[in-house]
Structure formats: structure tokens, C-alpha cells
Amino acid sequence: MPRVPPHDPQLLKGALSLLLLHLLAERESYGYELVQRLHAIGLNDVLEGTVYPALARVEREGRVSARLVASNSGPARKYYRPTATGYAALAEGSANWASFVDTVGAVLRRPIPAEPLEGG
Amino acid sequence: MAPRKLIWLDRLRVERAVWSLDQQLDDLPRATRLSTRREVRENLLAAAHDIGTTAALRRIGSSRQLADGYLTAEFGSGPRHSWMAAAYFAGLVPLVLTAALTETQNAFRDRVVAENATATGTYTWDGISHLQRSVALTLEGGSTTSLTGGDWVSQPLVWILWIVGTIVVGRLWPCFPPGASDTPARSRRTDYRPADPSRRISRPRAATNAAMVVSWGLAVPRRAARTVDGARPARRARCG
Image (cartoon, rainbow over all chains, first blue to last red; front, top):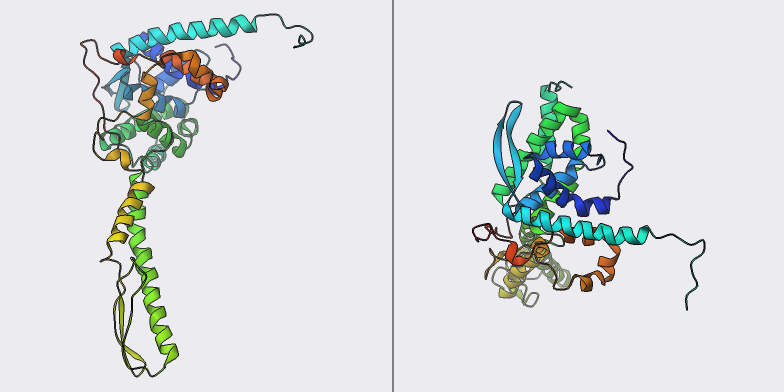
């Protein structure tokens, strides 16, 4: 797994719901499994204590639904998947994210002069 | 990697963490609280099987922060109601008030006896205006034979202040009608896109908080907050 430098927690917090929706759209998962999948894509600094309340929030907002599935190793697991609202939010969120990245990236890709130009 | 075997001590540690979290979720609706407890326990056990109990407990963080995350998820950020705070206020105020007013009764008696150590007869005092019923003290040779009144129970102002204080301290006003159960939580405001996002970005707080800008990526127009068949998702009461 590639070693990724730590991410800005504020940026991560903002993008977490979008990531969760996308991962759940790919495959139905339960809380800890989602954390493992986030780690697998390089987001090692995302902790369980952040992911579980974020899942509760998107469920509260009606963007994911949950069902209990019996587990061999203990109590039943709560598996999540996006609802129709969740898919709509994911599509719109992805478009907004791409637009945001384009806008910010366009500025950050500009060459930086040795000295700032003088104002006035 | 083969899953680790959990011994009773591991399960005890997990249960302790779940219990500790549960103690701080008093204000969640009962069903949500039960479901949260069950889910956290299950996730902790899965993590403990995978990375060990110590690491699983470390990664989930403090129960206080986790509880705060769940409460924010349910009620939105910012100040929220607290039944516990309301209960403490409602329980403690009568005790404190009774103790304080008993002291004023005693002070009245002490003053009368200090002026005349062999006083005999009935002495009255109006008490603290609007807080206390008048006090009647009967003495015989400086000894108290009866001390009546002085309580707050018959004072309407005290009851009003007590009830209003309980509501204010517990921030309980969203819990009462009209429309208590269908008032959307503050977090639901993110469901509604601003008419002109650029105006929001121009606010200093939004401009300095990239997360807010990014989180708009998930904003859904109000009309989209419906299921495929056009029904709105069920709303929950704001209060537990």
C-alpha cells in the first residue's frame, strides 16, 4: 500500500461523507469494514471515531439505509447502502468536488514569481 | 491474517467502552441509542478481532468525543437540548431553595432570641417577598415551641421561575409543541443549497473553512430530499 502523507483533517472531514457514499455505492459495508476500505485507499489517518458518527449522520439525512446481517464472529452487523437520495447527493457532490478541485488546482498550478508583484 | 481470539477480558474492555459511550448518549432517542450501542459494540469486536483490543479501543478515541459526534449527527452542531441538565436543575433547585429558606427562618428566630433571651409569644415575619410564605415563630421563655411557614411551595413566582429555569437550562424549547416533532434538525439545513453559493463563500467563516466549501459538494436541493416514489423520508423528533 502506498504511504500517503497525513491529510488536512478539515479537508478530510468535508470530503468524508462523499467518500463514504462512493464506497458504499461500490459495495455494501458495515462500519469497521468501511474504515478498513478507507485505510486501503491510503487514508490511514481516518479513525473509527470519525467514521461512525459520519455514517450515523448520512443515515439520519436519509442518504444511506441500513440492514442487519448475521455475523459468525459476534452480533449482527449493520450494513449500509446508499438510498436514491444518497445516489443523487453522490452525483452532485462528485460534480461539485471536481469543479472545486479544478478551480483550486488552476490557481495552484500557476507559476509563482520570485517576488510578489507590487500592488497599486 | 487469522482473526485474533478474544478472551473474556477483551470483551469486558469492549463492554466498558460501550457502556462509557452509552452514558453520554442520554439525550438520543431511545431507539437510536440502542442501535448506536449495538453498532459500536459490533464494530469494536470486529476491530478487536482484526487489530487487537488495545488498538481497537485506541483508534475509536475517547468516548466523550465519540458521543459528541453521535449527538451532533442526530441534532446538528451548536447548542442542543439536554434532559440531564434539565433534570439536575429541576432536582437541585428545590433542595437549594429549601435549604436557603430554612436558614432565613433560623436567622429570624436567632435574631428574636438575641434581642430577648426570655422572649415569650408569637412573632411573625413576612419572609422574602415572592419567594417565601410568612414565618410564624412561637417562643416560650426563649425556647421555640413552634416555627411555621417560610416555605416556597405556595409562591407562584417560584414555580414559574423553576419551570422556566428548567426549560432554559436544558434548552428544552425545541421539544415542545407546536411542531416539535417535525422541526428539522439544524444539520438538515445542509440539505438546502443556498440560492447563490458565491454569497455564502464571501462570508469570512466560509472563506476560511475549506471543509465547508467541500461539504457543499453533498448539498441536495430540498426537492431532491425525497425518495424515488416522491415520499419524504420519515422525520424524527428533535428531542430524545
